[in-house]
Image 1 (tube, rainbow, N blue to C red):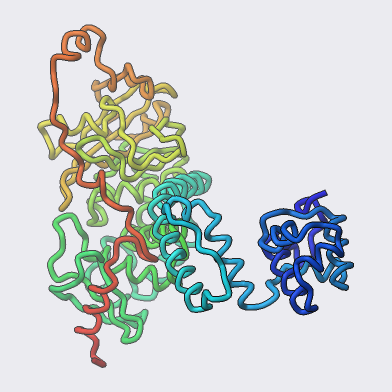
Image 2 (image 1 turned 180 degrees about the vertical axis):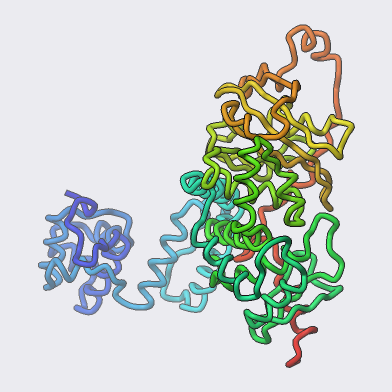
Length: 489
């Protein structure tokens, strides 16, 4: 029987061979015994005792009992999981580090743990190793963690049909507080809402480029950029900042919590801009008239198309009984946002992540880029592996280029939408590569080996994943900004 098969201690922690070895060494030296003395007492050579004390061999239960008897302690004393001293704890930690894969990858010779090696030197080595480990973990794990977090969050949203009653109730309470009843939420009411929550708004020309807004909690200020991006709604920027305050968001502890906070703040801001009290009757009437349209929701509340499309997904299933899907795709077909509860088959990676994948070129999200008329909504039916879907798409322009925003539903529910009579129809067999990712055999045989393209690398290909509690935020620039604008300073 080895240590791994022994019964765990009361606190559930079992000592490893290093800890047991250091405890045996401490007990031996306290009793004035040499390696030879202890070896004779247990019937082993001194060299074997040394191997045990250095934590290089696991002991069987019978051997542990012989050591305990020779050192006049109980077996429980010997199996105490805590290091016998602070120095022993440092030595154990250093030994563990040197036996790990990160240290091995450095190609450095092992450092003998001698008495002449000071505690400060060991602490410095451990500190350097810890920082190396942190950097390697961020580089290796963060992208995977981000994809997993996105996948899990999208699954949770699907289970709730992307509808959050608690956030709807919070939006109603805030709107009642400033007396908003119907129609678009004005910039004046946004300012009044900020004041109601204890904040003053400050429009500044030097807001750090890595942030959309900043809440100064000490002075009750919200800083927003004086010059907004063409695609930005200044009301939305303020409302998202206020939403984080209302929801009591603290510093996110991981990427999953960061994403969850972002979804909640975006949802609450949209629920303030497009209140359910006004939007639901409008949508119900449009369904009865078979004239559902994202454009009408956009125009009724004075928001951009993406906000209206997002808000439609919040309300469509809960209040209209219509399952839907949503896509935001750049001109190269890369998905940046996605949601579905209508069983449409999004492209995914091995982890199930959709964001970052390329959508089929026959879907409306990509076909819309080829349409000359950018002012009219684009409608399309697409025969997909999971069935036929109707979709409406529109191009929007941002500081990072053009992207399409699409909302769709299954064929059975297309009858409720304006644009259902479109004759535009495509067939998509993706993820079958023969659909649009692999050229026809005759074309491939014609050009394979007779062409050599020069790829245009995406600037993000070699970019590091943003790190920190608020990914991508330059805290040095942020704190310099707050110091410049703080009334106390």
